[in-house]
Image (cartoon, rainbow, N blue to C red; front, side, top):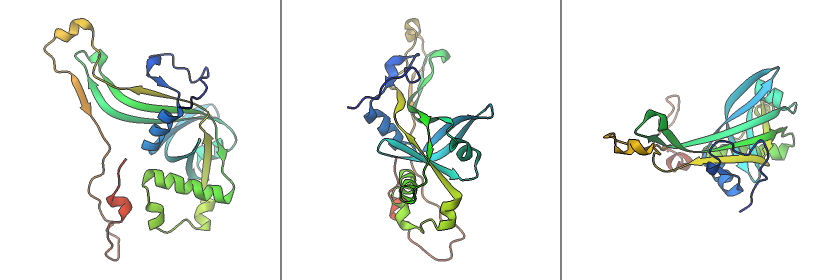
Length: 216
């Protein structure tokens, strides 16, 4: 189990027992999620932008419009913080103070670089697509030259990162365990509902395998 180096920025100060720095845990969380939040500071103003992403090896890829504020600024070499969070349950305690969530999260710090080589950019877009809905890329029209030009892809190495995980039941104050109050977990999950066809479709088409077999 490969461990990332713990840096002053990735060392957990609060509840350090929930911290993880091994690549297996970090990669598993990244691979289950599909929306990240990208944080950066431009002209003294903090921004946090949600976007889709994908992981390949030791890199995260995320994309957006080449004209977007996020991509224009990050391509200049600004420091970036990418966060992914999965919520597994609401933790319902006997006191409101000890309510919490069971979660798995990853924070990746570093400097993202613009992917300019054509083959890597193409593969990165496929990685992002497959992370969001596996197999869809092979079912649809691929991006054309104009679309590729309008899209920027950033690559962030997973070299300075940490995960944080909470599991288990509520942790109340000892005297509160005698209170006649229900406590426990409300599990949550991400699951697909029945697909809804685009009303603008001009012909009948079977629901594709990527949609029928979708799961996280």
